[in-house]
Image (cartoon, rainbow, N blue to C red):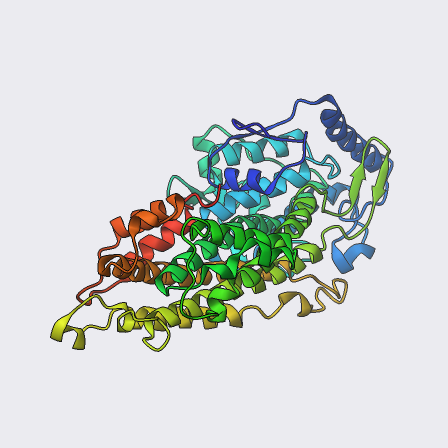
Length: 513
């Protein structure tokens, strides 16, 4: 993909491509590559030929799922995909937000652009128009078991394309038919395979996994930076992150985390060797905890991007080779495994940061910092409670994140008259992972503000020289401190926390470039 436009149907797409599209950073277009065009055209022509010859094709000339044994009269074949979109219109729960909806459209377009789904140019082009004009189907979050793909949520994409569902457009929820009329677009009439092609795939879970990966990658860096700030605040031992030490346990991601923290602590210019020979585990073992996520990211990326760049509906239509291949590529097991794993390693970051803030506020462990990090003095210290409630909140967010680490993928249910008798639960795993991201970001925001308050106290007391901070850590500390007034007298901190969470989620701080 070029920096100016995302091209579908040519090269492999990356997680970053989907994230950029989701944030409306780039427009999308279809490739004009001749081979891509041949795949699309040949699949359409092959399907038309089979229909004329009365060929048997699942979901085209037969019913769906356990109704595969029901042969559809040819005069009703054209109505079948319309019914598929309608009877799956039973999703519940809150709708996906605009960013998630854009990612879902882009991920489905990525699969259909592989050229093995038997879809028309009209369908592909309308998906492109929806993305570029920011017409986003209202898609309920609940109702998918992850095989046969994300049928129910994707029915809302199909329904919007034919003008029968609602969309988000310019901050309002409107009828897709009305929005298309206003925009000079024509709702599509689904060809025989197209309802199944849109719905019978892993687009929702894969889209969410791309967004989750982007957030997790950033959180590994942020947790490293917060660990460095916490170590400074606690007057920790920077030798815990020594390069020789980590050379003897050579997990590359773990070593990278240690290097980032070592860099932040200015270890070689200003090595800090505290009176304590060994810091508590939440500081000393931070590279070993964050490093598990960092070392898992390449594997997660490989699995997600393979799914993203796959044809994952059923049946597969090989127009060039003239094959109809019935299989189970809609099964979301790989994404389910990645999301179940990712939410576990990310929740561990929440638990790590929760232990760090617990040490920062506790006079038994914070090496001389005031109780609850309150900067009040004299007799007023008796009525001020600093970060006491923030630490309680961090503990609550952590507990909820840890609770959600139960793997969703082991809760397969037999559905649809026992045709779908083993399902992936990939979308539930992905939704859980995004919730764990949110909770972890809340914990990290809490600990970040506490660490900045603590470092500020050390600088004010003369125990730490601001000018000895490493340039990158100093820049972030100064930015946070500029927007976070020293907590002297108790005040509600909700607004400060929400501001910080937003800064994390928009990746305001460029960490370890």
